Image (cartoon, rainbow, N blue to C red; front, side, top):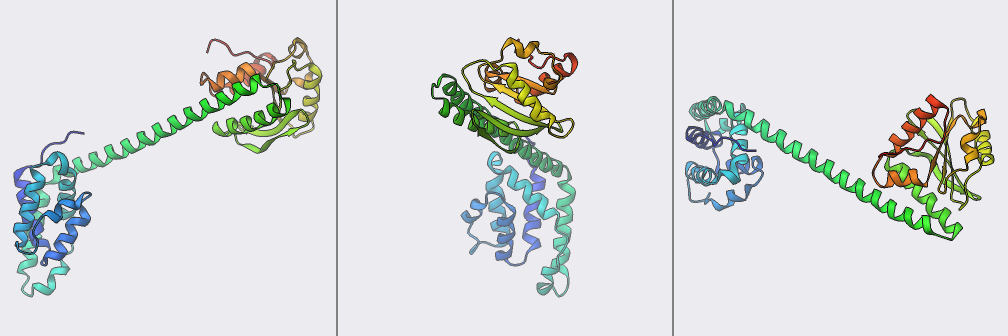
Length: 305
């Protein structure tokens, strides 16, 4: 973010105010170092031999000569020095009040000269916050894409595996991680029961039972009837998601039984669309549920994405 250079008058007023607000050089240096983000340059000044004004003047001049590096710290010094309202630390050295008056006057003058720069400081802070926010978003996006790509690679291995036991174990792990990635946290981890994976999750305030099969043949209507019986045994309005890697037989889509009306179906191609990043899992569930609600069709193939 490009900002205007600090004026010569403001820099002179800053030198005078800094020299006046602290009596001892040690306290002045400490104030400056604590105010700056990059205080290394403070150590390049000879604070022992120089007077306060000489030390401050050298410091400000060096910073002003490279405002592309030190503008933020100069603005911070302007702001923090202008914000000083308590001068009680000068009382010990100032029985007559002259030192305190000089400090108050110099800070007041600085405050009047630098009002416009405080908006710049706020803009810089907002810009820094925005950069940090964007960086975090990028990190999350990259991390999400990397994780999704990793799950895709594992899914392709599952698809070609001939070992049924390993296929089931790997699919169980993949589904758990996939649902967690899309914040569809299972009520408990999906588990292998016999030749299928059972579980439950919540989506859009609805409770779902999940059943997944990795058999190399098409799922038939009998499997859906059994799953429908499980759903009907739960609380009213419980829904179901049945996943079959190799798809469903025609009788699954042709059946008109009411026992299957509370479920939606996903196959391996649906999962691949999610893992390809063509559609989010929660969006797919929403579309399939909406279509089933509108048409009564529980096996809706999403295409054209």
